[in-house]
Length: 255
Image 1: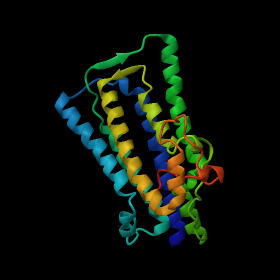
Image 2: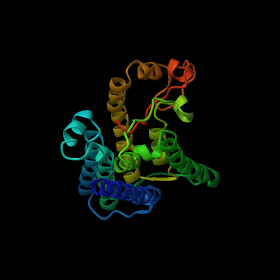
Image 3: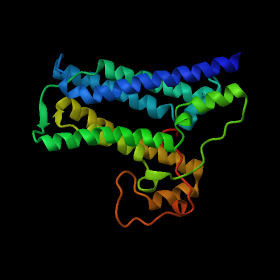
Image 4: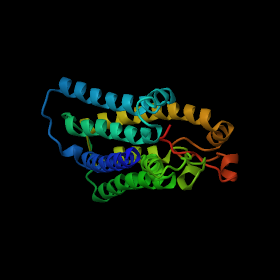
């Protein structure tokens, strides 16, 4: 019975994530249409607090030390589902309590340029979703672990591979976020603040995750990192040994 409720818990966490994530996409798509409803100082403090809470939760709970301590409370097979639930809950707080800021930074008037930016916006989310499929979507969001727990089967972490866009950049999933966040025909001050803060967090989070990936995968990840750009494909990068052997980077959000 305990394993059955564990499976239900994993499914519920995943469905909650899906609902919140779709709401977050809509939030980013429409955030430039929102009207300010509080003072600039108050709005900045609230928004900074919301994004800080997300960053602390998202990176803090992903560290190995926290996971070891958390395993004394939450069964290890359900740790990922709990992480997904907590991250989704904090993301929902960001979306629900975000305060629009006054002012417009830029507005694109050319119809073709507007359409192009809109295409980039949806391309960013499509790239993100594609990357989750390539690196094992159900493992990334805890369903695989919950299923293994229910069926009483041993769980094996995803192998180290570089599928598709991972051969061009080490973090295409994060690249998808950045493309979506910055592809705005009308960039308000609030959207700019959101994009800048999220970009800064992503750059910091990558350093933390890569440290864990090196500790977990050792020389394989070091070789991969030396031969593949972080976020933007750069000319002159030599194919890594990991790429030539068709090994690959484990998913960037599990560490």
